[in-house]
Image (cartoon, rainbow, N blue to C red; front, top):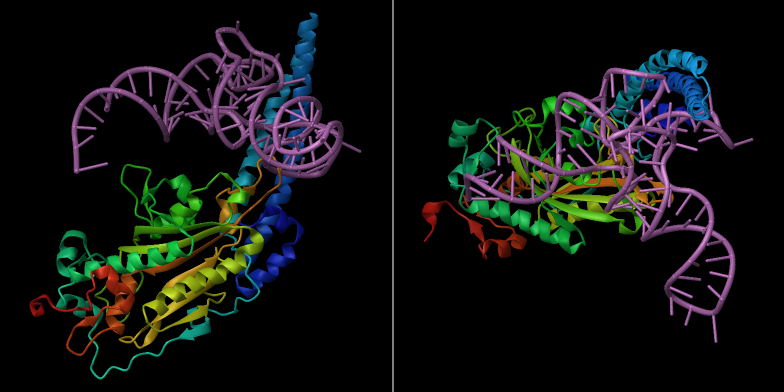
Amino acid sequence: MLDIRLIRESPDVIRRDLAKRNAPEKAKLLDDVIRWDKEWREALANADALKRRRNEITRQIAEAKKAGKATDKLRKEAADLPKRIDALDTKIDALAVNIRDGLLRLPNLLHESVPVGKDDTENVEVAKWGTPRKFAFELKPHGELLEALGGADFERARKIAGAGFLYLLGDLVRLDQALLQFALDYMIKQGFTAVFPPFMMRRAAYEGVVDLADFENVMYKIEGEDLYLIATSEHPMGAMFMDEVIDDGRLPIRLTGIATQFRREIGGHGVDTKGLFRMHQFNKIEQFVFCRPEDSWTWHEKLRANGEAIYRALEIPYRVVNVCTGDIGTVAAKKYDIEAWFPRQKKYGEVISCSNCTDYQARRLNIRAGKVGGDKFIPHTLNSSAIATSRGIVAVLENYQQADGSVTVPRVLRTFMGGQKDIRPPWEKG
RNA sequence: GCGGGGAUCGCCUAGCCUGGUAGGGCGCGGGGUUGCUAACCCCGUGCGCUCUGCGCUCGGGGGUUCAAAUCCCCCUCCCCGCGCCA
């Protein structure tokens, strides 16, 4: 949510930004918001004047009664006021709702370094690491490989829950846990506090962290309860300090969430539909930071560096893209995607998304920082994956596949798997 | 699920019965005083606006009234006990 004061004082700054996004409907919305705000302030001033008069009369009646004088005349004037005040208040409330809705739909201001582009094909590569391995054999789709290794049962999962779910089995469960353990340990070493959050949230809290459309498209609702399953641990971590004033001595607050998360909408189909690239349920270690506004760009680079470090440690080639205006969405001021190399698809695919939301998310959540009784400011929020094990597993399976059908365990994960060096079909074990 | 108690400024709390400017303490910020740390005194400390001023704010919504934290109705959430339970 943008600051209404910025919209009043510098609408042209916002107009230029919306032009970069090529979003004429948002520019129109901006004009609507400006108009509603002007009407709102006028109506508010009028209502306040009437309320002032009402309060004066009320006070006079109190004094007259105390002095034993007649109050008939005053009462007559006062009786007329409520109706006029109500009419204005109704108008003020309606305008305020419009303004709020409009503000929720206007996107964040972009950082100047965000490239202009129409969609994800125009994201700009800013870094690249590792050399994709050459394979002398034909790679199996990771879904088939999983089944051959006895690591997943898709059919029985479909039987009991439908597409988009799976039974993860045997060594693959261990691999999943090892990835989580490794990333969590890494984040803790960076000074982040581990968070195991609620997996469900009430609607009021959820409205602070997602777009309204997401309730229809993304969120699972618990029937008969005011609860939604979390779509990422970014949500409960962001909402954690909702409606609070954070003592600025506590900043920066660095959190790393570990959670299972749930999404209804799992997107379109591509290569290798069977598998765990897009799931209704997956595990993720997440990074989240609340910081001072002047520090957020430094933090953005640090979160990106953490994500890169994790994939480098896994020895999986990746590249980093600066996400362009057509792909960045409404909340982030700047977003890096880290894309791992997927040799089967012969392309880089998103495994980490790293955003600086500046004050946009915190304002919406009504989070302030500073000294109570002193000056306050809106802290900046940032979030990034550290590892999502669904896609992390796919990246490992594809990059570490061997000609004999086994999969080598990345070196850094072995201590989390009891020293195990590779994953083989169960019948090959001694 | 049953019974009871609560929600007032960042935190703690008074006010509610009996309607008439929401008070105090802590914490925090600023100033003063004092040879140190301390103690003490004064001012400030929610949100909004067309900002010397005014309006709003007592969990939310409705009602009664010239006037509601206070009276009436509905709802939400939290806590305690009992029951059930990994």
